[in-house]
Length: 120
Image 1 (tube, rainbow, N blue to C red):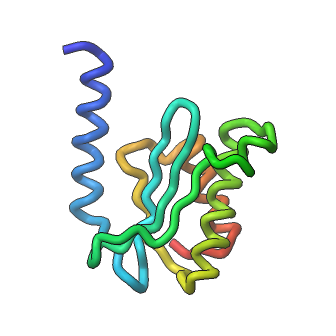
Image 2 (cartoon, rainbow, N blue to C red; image 1 turned 90 degrees about the horizontal axis):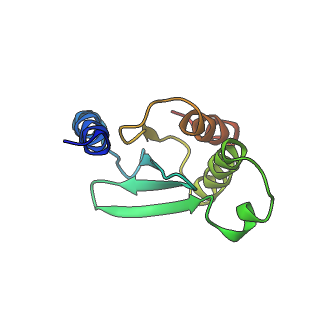
């Protein structure tokens, strides 16, 4: 097995363990984060109905135009998602790091969301 496959299967295993414990509801949706090499994506999910309530990513034009580092972009994504969430009446979430370490861009997004007013 190549190193890439080992890493990917390890993250999937960790992700499964997290998802056993973390579920989103209408009152407290799940804030799920995905980090690619270029961008970061975040969405609020109601697992009871299987519906995405809101989403935002650094791939959006308003973030790309700012010419900031990936970590700073992650923080901006967190703040913007918090704005969208508060506009739709969501103030508390559960954080799903999706198998990634709570470090760097994932941590920056979480801190941005907290600054924006989300509680988790």
